[in-house]
View (spheres, rainbow over the protein chains, first blue to last red):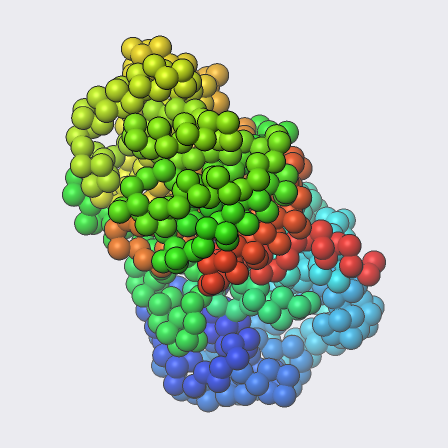
Length: 320
Length: 320
């Protein structure tokens, strides 16, 4: 019936997603503290910062100071997000500390491509082709193809699986033309339109077209269905997920100021571990880090688990 | 592969679950306002109050005033919770306004039975037998068998499916001895121990033993997995759920003061409707009532959906 993976790889994006949206300001030392604490939980991938315009994202004006400041733990892949050549150069200045891989990033929604990037889909494809060439010319592999708004869009409504497939085909064409070797598709529920049925349908059609491609999901919990969506994906064997500790982050789009952020790392870990899927993460330790994140941002985070405590903690104290 | 129901019946318990735990005080008029608003959303079942000791649950000291006060909408089943003969008599005073059915309520955890009721399982079975006889002697049908802590317990740890089965057998024996006709089992994840795998396992074993019995789930979102648990149950054809608007409620047990309440009605409705399962509920209207609930309690409620807004609202405005 099901096709559960034995283990999953979780890409922790709390620092990057969270600190870009918090009204803050959050001090550089606190950002470093959270990044270093996350590295002690058993997570292998931590997206530590965003190399973006400080004018547009003031919360990451201190990206360089943060990356300089944290002590990198061996065995952890730290990454920084960027969208253009300037951001890439800023990241490359830390190429000994950060894992730098390029992505081809497209959007399944014409409306969101216009709103978010002020580009037509054709202009975006051309920009991504140039960026891919730029990466490869610097010797940086481009192995990921990401699709934003893959499950629906505030500006365009529902997105059909066929549109996701054709957007992936656009990306694969860029890869073919430039010589990039795509190893993984990342499907993002950017604005929280995913529901289990839709997740199953899109994953099914992508699998039919590219049976051997790894798939990663980037789920937002905007409407409370992210854990159910992850459950549906796990049942289809998906083993790569992005998430944020405490549910840090939020939705900067379309008038949703109080909307939740990404799927919480703790709840994703709980879901997996209770289903017998290994995460490598020490959940009790991660819950402590979630509480630290809550202290740092100074308000309650969406994670229910950090408020309730893990089951294992109760299992240990239960008087049976 | 799946066995999705065509429709589900949702039992809204927000007023009862929510107002018993809010530090409040919440005014009687506000309670009535919420109950009347819920009745306009398409929900058919509203648990309006709790006839319990005002010393133990001061939030429901005004149960009589609330039931007297609200205008009952035809076609809606309003209920009041009670645990003993005194509570039953208080409910019976409103038998023209409330739907009154008895339940046999047992607990799968010895530790929780002791902590919550200060009874051994045997004492609880005897008490439930007496209560069932009392109901039947008054002409009140007893058609529901409920099991608390069916998926785990803060005081006892994991609960095996075999324990759930044997607790249900205890309840069915009470029914047989007293002549009660059980039509539905209600399995409660009282302290938020449920995870999809456990839900599937317990449901599977209960179905094997009683293939034709209706099953209802009472899910708490204590650790963020309630929607995923509902998803797993829907896939197994479960079509009765308790829930609370906005995620009202919380966990009064075992030092979890900030823990979340029940599964949010809005998110359950969204999950169902997006999967093509009819709820009869107008989700946009329900979201407005969730926001009203948030205003009444005066703090942010766990529902993410009431903060983000429905997909249909965006579908209507999307510029395609």
